[in-house]
Image 1 (cartoon, rainbow, N blue to C red):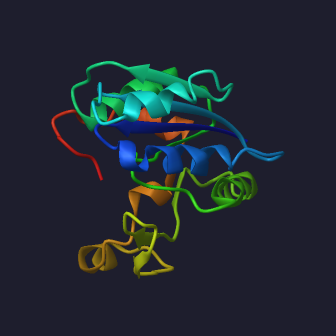
Image 2 (image 1 turned 120 degrees about the vertical axis):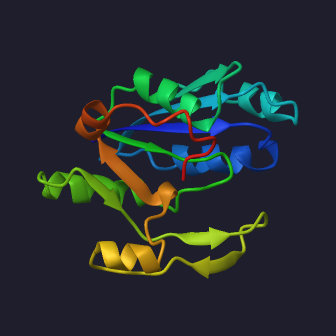
Length: 175
C-alpha cells in the first residue's frame, strides 16, 4: 500500500531529523511511501538537516515561503500519488511499524475511509508525558468530552481528500 506523507515545517530544526527518520523507517514490503517535506524557509538549522535528505529516493524537499501549515499540507498532498494520505508535523514521530499496522487495517477493511489510532504525547527528549485517552467506540458525545482523535495518528484514503477538498487555509493551524 502506498502512503503519501507530508511534513510542514517552520523553525523545527531541533526535532526534524527524528521526525524524518521515524517516517523512513516505516518503508517495507507492505508499505511503500512518498514523503514530502515543505519548509517555510526556516532559519534554525533546518536547511542543513534537509540537505542530508535531499537526494533520498522517497523524499521530496521543498523550501519556499508558504501561507501557513494548511497551505503546506495542501501543496504536499497535491503532489501525492499514494492511496493513503497523512501529515506528520515536524515535531512528531511515528512509532515503529505504525504504517504497517495502518496498511493492514485499510487492506482488510475496504469500506473504511479514515482511521485514527492510539498515540502518546512526548516531550522534547522523547519522554512520555501522557497517553491519549483510549476510546474504542466513536461517538459524538464522547468526542465532546475527550479529544481522542490525534492528528499524527489519523490516516485518510485518497478519495476522502478528493471528495472533501483541501484543508481550509483560513485556519492558521490545523490539528
